[in-house]
Image 1 (cartoon, rainbow, N blue to C red):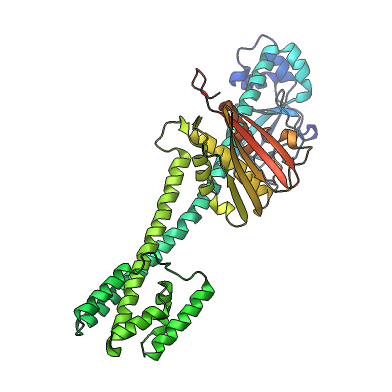
Image 2 (tube, rainbow, N blue to C red):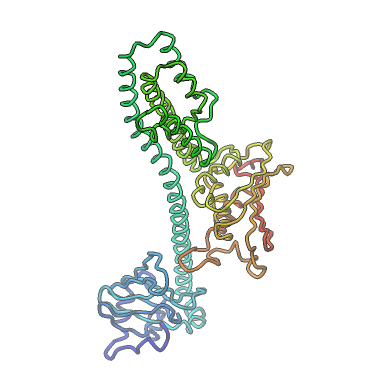
Length: 482
C-alpha cells in the first residue's frame, strides 16, 4: 500500500462511473452535495486478477482502501502463521483510517476473485476533516469498530491459546491415571483366574480348619496399616532377590514372577517362614500362589481406586475452575480457586517448578465472578512459568488486609526490565516471540481485577518478581465488589 505501488487511475476511468460505484456503499451515501465528487476526484483505481497482490506484509500503510468489487484474503506470510485470515470484500473500507496507529501491513493480501480497489492518500485526511466533516466522522466510526473487532479477535485468540494449554495439560494429567487404571484392570482379570486355580487346588488338599482360617485372615488383614510397596526401587529389588531365593530353595515354579508380586505387596521373609512352619512342603506351593494372587488383587484394586479417584478429582477441579452449573457471581474461597488453577496447570508446572504456598486460611470468602478470577490466577502463574522457562520456584501468598484480601504471586525468574514495566498491562503489548503471545494476558488480568473493584501492582527485580492482587470483601449497592 505504499504510494509507489498504487497506480494512476486507468485511462478511460470516468469520475462519474467511480461515483456510481462509491454510492453503492453505505458509507458514501447521503453525503452533502459536492462531497462525493471531491472524494472521487482524489482517488486512484486499479484492477486485480485472481492471485494478484493487493499489498504485501511489511509494506508502508499510507492509503485508505475501498473495495469496489471482487474479494481479497490477507494472511501472514512471514514468520509464524497463527491461522487468522482477514477478508476484504466488495463494499469494505480498510487500509489506513483516521487515528489508526498502523504503520506497516501485518499480512499479505491476494485476490481470490477479480476486482477493483480505489485508493485515497492518507495525506489528505487533514483536508478531509476540514472540508468533509460528516464523511470524516464516518471513517472514524469505521476505525473504532475495527479496533473493537481486532480486540475481540485477539481476546478470543488469547482465550483459545489459554484453553489449548489447559486442555493439553489436563489431557496429560487424565491420561496417566486412566492408563494406570486400564493396566490394573487388565492385570486384575489374570489375577482373578490365578486365584481361582489356586483356591481349587487347595480345596483338593486336606487342609485343617485352623489352616483355612489362618489363610483367610491373612488375606483379609494383610493391607491393614501396611505399606503396599517398598520405600524405594533399591529396597524393592533387594526384597525381590530375597523372596526369589526363598522360593527357589523350595522349588516353587515361576519364582521370579511370584517374587515381584510379593515384593509389591511388601511381603517379607518372616511371613514366608511362618507359612513354611504351618504348611507341608507339597501344599506350600499352592498356598504361596493363592496368597500372591490375593495380595495382587487387593493391590490392583487399590490402584484402580486411586487412579479413578484422581480422575474424579481432575473433573471436580475442572467444574470448580469453570464454575460449571453455578451462578456467575457468588461468594468464593480464593484458596479453592488457586488450588483448582494449580491442578489445571499441573502439566506445565510439575516438570521443573516448585510451588510454595503460604495461605492465611482464616480469610473470609469474597463476592466475585469465580471463573473470571481463575483466569487471573491462570495468567499470573502461566506468565511466571514462561518467565522462568519452566525451571524455578513460585510462591503464592494470601493475607487479610483489613477489608481486602491480598493474593501475591512471586517467582524467582529474571525479572521485568524497568523500561517495559510501565507497559505490561497495555493491550497487545507482549515480549514474547511471534506466535507465542497476543499481549492480552495481563490486559485481561487488569480488566478482571478492575471489574472486581480491586487493584493489581507489580514489583520486580532480577530473581524476585511479585504480582500483588488486592480484592475487596464487601459489595457495593449495585452488586459489584468494592
